[in-house]
Image: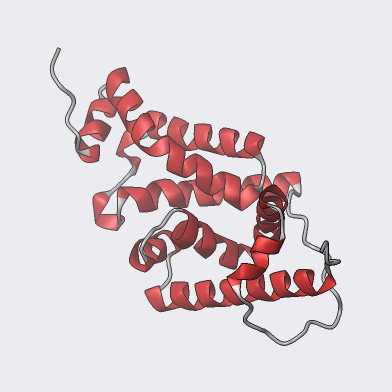
Length: 192
């Protein structure tokens, strides 16, 4: 049996010829990142599984749908996942914002040590809830740049905006999260 090429373009060509092993290799290489992205964007394991499956079903149905001249393969996969996740979120009405007070305090920078006052599991659950409460444009950059560790340039390609826009949205998203954490810490009773 011939060894499969590591190049995604070649895998896509082989997928278009019906090569199931090439698809399995392609799927193994990319499904984790797509699943995590959708999970972080929607907060639902079921939706993440469904959207991830749909992304790869589109690859099987139309492996020639990706055009390298239009951008990176990651951009194509994440962009498809982004659009499908948006549609699923609208259909399922999963977005549940955090309770915010009407009078938002000015943005403040707090020490990350404040998170240490929360138990690890409580803190992670709360951060996940805060992430889901962010407007979509901020949530996307947090997921792509912070959680998926993508470069600003790659995130900009996926989001179809400039790297400056990515940097600006990421800065604003961090500020909003810091403010929410600061508000929470001021309102949390001391357990000393």
